[in-house]
Length: 90
Length: 477
Image (cartoon, rainbow over all chains, first blue to last red; front, side, top):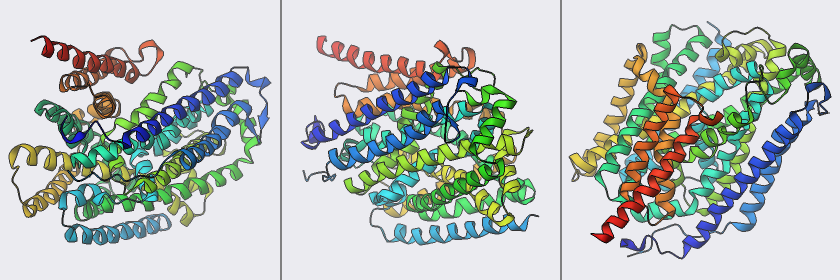
């Protein structure tokens, strides 16, 4: 195809980083879903509380946010590469 | 008039004016007007990139009606809102570097530009420009009305005057300053939203007697409020999970969001942007919706959801602090409106006028047309906000899901899948939008999920089969 739009050495890295995003979302979803419905489906009388919040909410939404934050920082710092984004001269 | 609330609001508008004029200098200095006006010269740093993404996305609907719904539904709605955490990292990671590289190769300034170069098809351009114009225009009108109503309710100024104040504030800086002004004001307003929600959350927790006390009060009133299932137990896991698509990953396909993924300077900006936007979006969403839930014990019996946040702020904060906090929803509306305005005007000027009407226009003409179109669209929206037509209100209901269903596959597969063709893209856009409108109207929540999920799957099938079928035909003939 024209202008070598499908062949570019940089795509290999870019594709891998895009898949990282997909992996993070899947992990995020499992964490969120697992804690929310795993712990939250009991009757409210038997809920445990952490810092005043019901345990399901604390783990799923609050800790989940912290974990995703740390994971994102980790992934970006250690797996994402700096590169030039400019189009090469034709 | 409530002067303590009005004063911070006006100071805030004055600051934004100055930014617009300052950014206008870049526009008049730049040697590539289009790149500068519609994309800020591809020079955004990480912080501004993150802020403009988060604020464009977190509109009035999430800032006023979000806490209002959380007030009525309890923690289940906060759980639902946290599906938006994904937007923070997903958009920038998935479109990511490849989108930045490809759009630079194409010299694309808008999403339609990108689609045009990728699919080389007039019909793709027409369909995508049409869906952007229809959906974003109605979304913008709805937000605009929200903005004016907010000024009205905060200050006691009549609706018409409030509308004029709001409109002039937005129009001036967008018309003069373009994308750069929009992005920088988004940065400042993002900070206001961040601090505003934090202050209000702390004040509400104190007023409610601490988190444990609030949770106890809620469970006494209705134990369902502290479960993930909503006040009457109607929030099913399948339904709530489908919001991962609508307000989580699907956001990648909103043109006003995707265009920001081509505006950053370099990979350092991208990396910082990913981290900051994840933090800011999670923080604001969590705080803002918790405010709604906690507010229920502090100020019970509020009937209209949208007024929960303003009423709480005025109840638990000293007047002038409330004024600053209430600049936050105002900021949320402005930041969404300004991006939509620029998006609509870029579609008209860049994608329609320059493509089909005057491809040979010189820089001066383009400049005149761009600013003129932005101003004109703004004025039309203002006039329509005086008495919003039903059609606009109806269309706005479909705007988010409709745009996502239309654009997700043409953008994502267009970027990563070589065999995708214009036939696939056209089929996918039509299937996505039409099936979404039909589902929402006649059969909401197929399989217990938000209709956007089914529409996207249909659109995917259409894209893949459209691309592959035609390919075969082309070979055999």
